[in-house]
Image 1 (cartoon, helix red, strand yellow):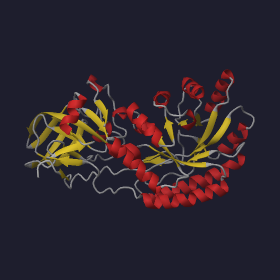
Image 2 (cartoon, one colour; image 1 turned 120 degrees about the horizontal axis):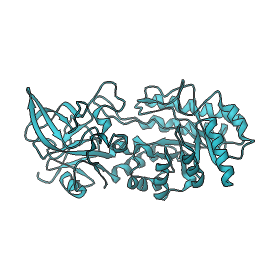
Image 3 (tube, helix red, strand yellow; image 1 turned 45 degrees about the horizontal axis):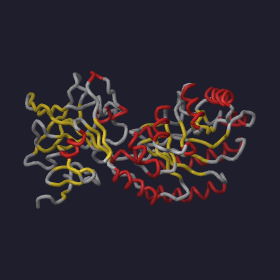
Image 4 (cartoon, helix red, strand yellow; image 1 turned 90 degrees about the horizontal axis):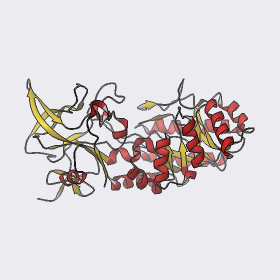
Length: 414
């Protein structure tokens, strides 16, 4: 029936997006209208509704006592940050630039923390001036903060980022265990904590972030358990009881065929028990879960227009006006060992009158500029719209925008 919603084809099982008259809808708007609103292609489009739905789902699964923070590095678009900030309990920034976005979005500095292994003196000065918590990642950084605070006549708010002796198993990116640039090695932390009592700083708590992009609930549960146990032991040397313990995130989203969504239920059940353990062993400390990709990744798409269609020795190539310079992750050049296709379809011909196997490439002079390799999709023509799903996180700002000097894409929050 014309105008009635339909489901996405089975080969692109991306939940929550609707289709009408064979065209993708975002926020109730057709893809054609969205491109008209953006005024150009390529474009990133993010859905307020899907972000809100994800946050509500998390709130329902996690204990109310566990605070939810948004890691802005996943998507620091100002409108996205402004939308998310009042819906979560805090923001985590990874640069002074992100800090300014957070403050401009109206975030309470008391709810903002700053992580990253290479903070400059200017970064630290901005953090102290704003009154946010700095997750200290080295002894050098700690003493720089002390000097900055002394010069300004304030006590910097600090937390200790710990590099534990364990990792988040099966994570897409391991950020702890063994030698790492992140945090202070766990065995060195007691000595640092004993120094804090003689330094003019305001100790707030701990940050333990062991990995990201994990689809195994059992691995996340194990890392959370070990993180709380480690912090409990370390707290014996702290100058005062910690006010919070950020146990990181790691919650992943499915990108590729065969991957299943993360099961929140066992994580939520486990956290209810962990809250009780923390209340006993770390009285007064709030447990914090820090999530970025999980909040926004599935709420965003990337749109590019087909500008040429060509057949080379029997293989169909759809050449678009977008590519790896806008979406490095989808090209397979942002951490993939073996390249796999993101979910991709023809957004204005979701099912299409006929189908084919095609390769979608961008306009750049490199064979790495690849958005879909030998993928089955509706037969497309010049002017049609390619859609790359799972594009709400680590898209625009994680890409080499200046490569070959093409214009940047538009961004919309609908």
